[in-house]
Length: 396
Image (cartoon, rainbow, N blue to C red; front, side, top):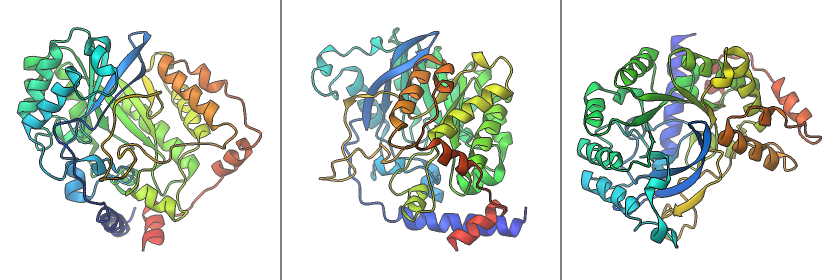
């Protein structure tokens, strides 16, 4: 790999990201209310359970603020322009547990103890004190510990924010099962840094985070993004398989494959609008699961998830990106798909896989007379250029 080409490609990606991010419209949100609350079905402890997902309205990812963020992500559109204080975060959490933020009849009958699994997200890194102050982290986790119906909590963080100090602060108030999702994305440095724009050049940091989390008895979930820009369909499958195998071998407890979806004001959406990108085929997602199971012994016991595919029931709706904009600022406008004939049934199979972890549901999906051959032809597409050269050719 030419260091000169790598640096040029990285500069071009960052310049394009800056242009895209500069077009994000002004945002004004109520920082006393969470961005969203929803429930869905989830596989936990050998059975299908109800999972509650709480997305706190936050100040947003520090990587976005300093270096324009990851290529596939535009969650920043749902963050507040004004600072979110510790008191704001605590108020948001309080409005969930007392039901006041919920819509319809749910507020009257709501009991958070009904949900064995809680996902608590902040559109960034929950362990970064510049995003979520230490006071808020401790008070929220102390509160969670009081609800005996909550058996497991899932949060997200970049690996660099996994520190002994913050883990100790959480363990002082909450001894329960806590899973931290780390964005690994790709084991390949060029893919991770140029295609994902992860700003995560050293995997030693990932290994250190895994070791430290296990030292404090946290579980680790590795996120693996499938098909960032600049990869062919077959390259994206192989990259997701290799990265997932690497993650398991590194000691993570679970992997979530995240097929790229399209959010406005992201690099992937920008390229899609120009006809230069396609989201991954659902057939490719199934092929990735098959490849992981093929390469890992005792694969039937893997905690493997397919992110983004759940039947959601919204308990507290979005506030919209701006006044009068009638859409949810957190949801993508396009997700992975096949053709109109089979997309719905394959998505239902993926949702059932997430509810049961039964991979035979995926493998039993028959070919589609309209698109299976098209997908197979897509797998034959190759590109002899290096990844930096592809980016230079495309973005310059």
